[in-house]
Length: 454
Image (tube, rainbow, N blue to C red):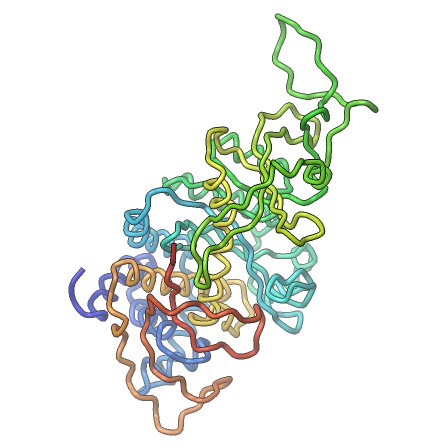
């Protein structure tokens, strides 16, 4: 679409502010979204208010803070207003897509910020005091957009009524596992008629046989990570043969005994002959082609002794590694090509890169409030801002296009800020995303959106 970036942004914001259900929220919402996209190290409310409204920082701060921390508007409605603006352009680039389930975490100290508990923190790769959230994103090789984002509230929080009330957790919120949250997000996407994609998730979700069975019943195709101990029926490892019968209902369960036991996928991988392994390249990366060594076989999942359909087991075992590094189960058709199966399995890692952008550039992890509503409102507006930037990139807008930020008040230094950040383009379509540790105390100056290279 033509016009300046400000005009395109105004058109983009119109259905979003309508979803906020109150005219008084229009201006602070636009300020908030613009503040998330302007350069700056901290994307908490006060620094953003100073950037977008330097002539009246205090008033802008109050209205933006109220919008996020206190105002009663629906996160689902706002995200539902974002998706129709971005997804058609994204899917026009390539219709085939993925639905990616992932959880993201951010380190948080203390015990009163909503959801903070000692739990696994993927950013650090260890157990730490942090908040965690589960998301569903639609993605293809050209980009992605989160469709749903919900905090994982640990059981210790759900069972602590006073602490939940203090943090504003709605009374209706009950304990849900991450898998249950993911399932609810997928159900909502199906109800909204979101274009279906191949469901991708790591072993934290794929190891739940019930989750895989539910996806297959929708029906939704999936490529889900599983752990090395997952057991399957394969080769000579088969259940007790059932007697032939022309009458009666089809069997729903299989039997095992001492001589009929499934095999763990690690043992299966170790039993495969060398000719079953192939080097597969799935796409071009910034430093060259991405490839590894894989094998695939047809198996039946053995969990719970249910009589399941045959599906693919994909195994990654790089040369030089002592044992395989990844395993996936997939109900994609038997006719799917080896390369396509690998490409789908590897598609999940794209969302990790996108979350780096959301956290380091759009401030997803910068919210300083403690309550349930503020946590989700801030994340929703970060996703809305990300959607606009994704749309700009997909439309091929110039690297030089950027919002014109008014100068900060002389001598202004908001809490938590460092030195003023240099102005830079909203979108750099060429610069590669540099390798760096997943956890760092200062964000590097990187492009707001990565350029997909195939």
